Amino acid sequence: MNHLRKILEKFREVKIVVIGDIILDKYIVGKVSRISPEAPVPVLKSEREEYALGGAAYVAECAANLGASVSLYGFLGNDKEASVLTDLAKSKGIKLNTSVSKITPLKTRLVGNGQQIARIDREETDEKFFKGEIRNSLEKDAESADIILVSDYAKGTITKDLFSLIDANYEKIVVDPKPANKDIYTKMRLITPNENEAMIMSSCNDYKKAGRALKEKFKCDVIVTLGSKGLAIFSEHETEVPTAAQEVYDVTGAGDAFIATLGVALATGASLEEASILANHSAGIAVSKHGTYAPNLNELNSALKGVSRKIVSLNELKAISSTLKRGGKKLVWTNGCFDIIHSGHITYLRNARKQGDVLLVGINSDESVRKLKGPQRPILAQEERAEIIAALEFVDYVLIFSETTAEKCISELKPDVYVKGGDYTTETINQEEKKLVESYGGRVEIVRGVEGKSSSKVLERILPKK
Image (cartoon, rainbow, N blue to C red; front, top):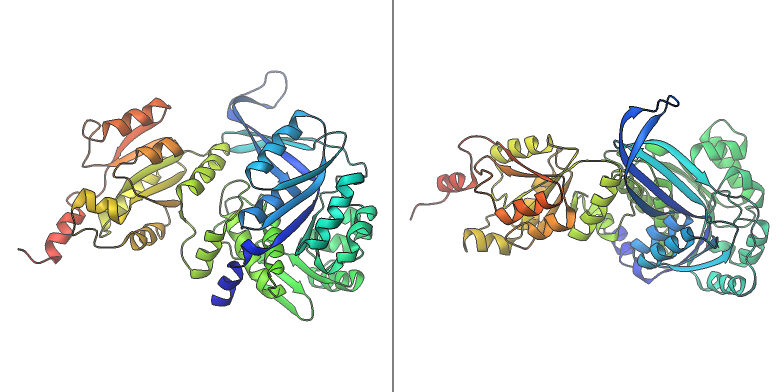
């Protein structure tokens, strides 16, 4: 895997141009407790609204989150949704270049009790044409880009006119296609349909036959993505790559994470097989998270090293927590030194997980353990402790924090439930942490482990007495 990690080291050096249908995703999240008397439909009591980048904008976010320099081209309306999307793109470090269309495409998802119950699409699919300054800018950026990613959602951005503008750079064009536009993909390096799209576009009833037929039709390489079965490459040789997902929580955005990573890897000079392996890992990371999630370089590196993808930074966990909450998940937080892991820890964490849907575990850094326990501790370094805790199936995410208390983490993450061990009471736990949790409506739970088990007692048995 060393050669793949060397490819990742080049990700920050590449320039990517993304062209496609820019969409704003809106989430209305709340609770459902009754059926409407007017019709047999659930009544959603709205609690909050959130926005996220969608369509080609999400592809651009994924590429930018991997360290690439990203320019995004598409169309937005003169409306409030355009302003929201523009601000989001700016916050992700994306250079946004847009022409004006009738409206900004908007997908509104209604989520009740963690379950999507309806989606409302606002869109128009008329053909759109880049003109004037934007057209000239696109032509120049396409020429200087390392890779051009075409993200087609069949909303009118991808046209014959567009391909005539960029086809001089055909060897750099990677297309995520839609069957409706199959006749305009005339010159490109690579096309990446999913299994169903490949069979529709080729009129074949088998993905292998479809891949071969599309390779012949478009005179380019083809990757057919196969969901849980992985992917199939049709190039000089035919190769299949199994899925990298360990556990699937949400398939939303997996294809976009795949093509973004594939494009960035190809831009570094990686082979199609190398880029596909990296992209497959990225898609695996995306589906192992809740909601649309843009994998980052640290996670890809961890996947290649065999290190659990559960170990994240505070900023990463904050973004993940926001997505989880948007999906209606109840977050449980606990923290500790976890030095010399024993059965008491295991039982305690298993019981903590039962308090909600997702368990977040904070682990004190080596320096904070020394402040709390003395200069001879910890016995195990923070990385080892984090890996051991992350290996537990009932632990969802692990965070190493440097403070001696969890106040900063709790303040940033705002978990629904804060769990402490059975050797505490509501009177003996850190009262500032307790007040903080209660201030935003969270609750504190005391959870039992195994009576008589502690790291200190284990150390008493294995260390020589003075």
